[in-house]
Image (cartoon, rainbow over all chains, first blue to last red; front, top):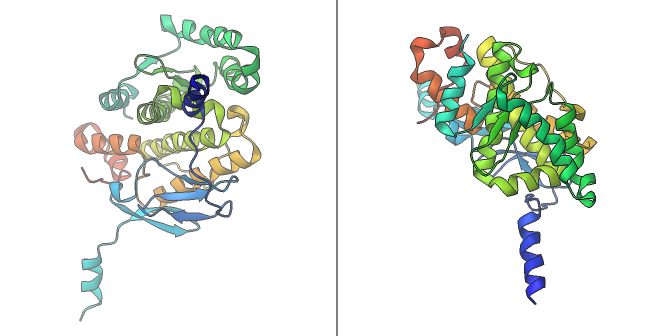
Length: 84
Length: 213
């Protein structure tokens, strides 16, 4: 039992920590639920572009050609522009 | 131009690391360690890890590396990296992305991920490459039209090279949109640049979005 446990621990410690397989279509894009740009890898995993969310850099995640961060639009200012 | 030493100071204040430059006494020692490391690997592991480490040894004249050590990470800069001040600064920023990855993931896991998965190697090198491109854009105003290919350097499969290119394309679109790439090193440098405006040329500062503190 002990060798098996040891092997399991070594395997856990020595395996690359890939994101889970999601079944996504390779080369497609999305914004993750917490607002990070992600691209689907050939192994059908969502891989992030960056190490933090768009919101943390004062931006929002958008999907236009690619998933990426874009400056957050000031909704209040936009509303005032269209209100007579 | 902002002196690379100032960039290094700002990054070191965030995450400590030791930088070895060509000409430093320890630089040649570090480069020669690559060969010893490859030779010390068990034969069974060489097909997996030796290919990457062997590349480091062969390419040490033009490739900079960050090594996870029991102490602070060690950045070994190549002669090409210090050939001019912009390249020097951009390479420091690139390598500090790896310093951040080591801090976030852990020394052992970083090495396991990097050597054991082409997909993770592609993702992490793409983020680091994007930081270098972003800083070059900030310092010079130059931004490539399309995402560069990382090439043979990192021993990526066709699929993993495409992943790296896609990640870089996302960061380039972020820069073109006028936002800061969502990367710790970009945030650290953006905050530092805006905190020291007297030392920073106005055109440079204009290319750096403000970020929430």
